[in-house]
Each structure stands twice: as structure tokens, then as C-alpha cells.
Length: 173
Image 1 (tube, rainbow, N blue to C red):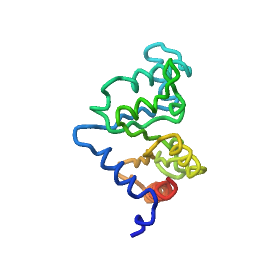
Image 2: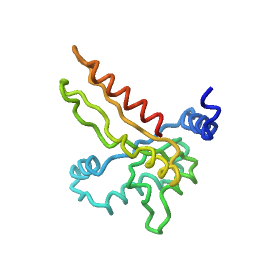
Image 3: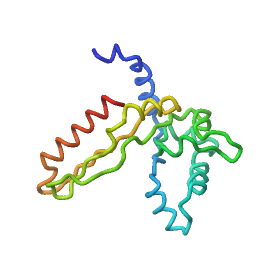
């Protein structure tokens, strides 16, 4: 079995068990700058670093959050966020026994020649990014793959493109 030679195999098993803890869930706090900006605009809040950091502080420094969460998917910018006293948000997650994860894809793009189907970007440099995220404390990663469902979708082209990306992601990350 190939996993037996992987130095991360045992850690991966332990992390999967931890994430799947009964009664707990994963918080997706991986909004990109654009997506969080859309949310902020609905409440007339400027989309700047300080406001994004304050929002993430509100979410991740809440005492007792670990009784409900086993993991949190973060956006890259969050890895360096700190509270007003300079304490890392990742330290709060560690104190609450919550596994930090990271969104590693770089968004969706249209697949030419399809009816609006998409593929995920971000494979270039993924291995180096995953190594850096691991060194910062992340222990799992999120990669999106979305297939359009319809009378003629998903197309073979979209299935193959997304399967290829998922396989490369699995090898690199």
C-alpha cells in the first residue's frame, strides 16, 4: 500500500478522524477578498484589510467555539491575521482544538467549447504553497470542483478536466 511509505499517512488518518468528530462541523471561513467584499457591501462596510481582519477575529476568537467545530477552512490572508494584542488567529484555533485548513484553489474559469461549465485554477505552484501552508499550521486543504448538471451536462470535457485537476491536487497537496 502506497500510504505506508508516506511520512504524513498517520497524521492524515488522525486529522480525518478529528474532522469527522460526531456533533462537530467545519466552518468555511475562506471567503476571497471579492466574496467578502460582496458581503460587506450589503451592510455598507468598506472592504479593507482591517475590516476583514476584524470580521475574522470575531469568528475565530470566540471562546468555546471548539465544542462545535472540528475544523476551519481559511483564506490565505487569514494565516497572518492577529488579534488586537498581536496573537495569531491560528493560536486561538489550536487552543480550541480546531484543525486549521486552507483554500488552495485560485477560482473557477469557463471551459471553452462548453455550455458554461467550469474548471478550477491553481495547480501551478500548488506543491510549494501547500508546503508553506503546512509550515504555518494548516492541516487540511480545500479544492473546489463544480460540475454543471443539466440535460447535456456535465460534458465529457468537463468531467475529464475536473477529474484531472482533482487528481493533480491529490498528488500535489
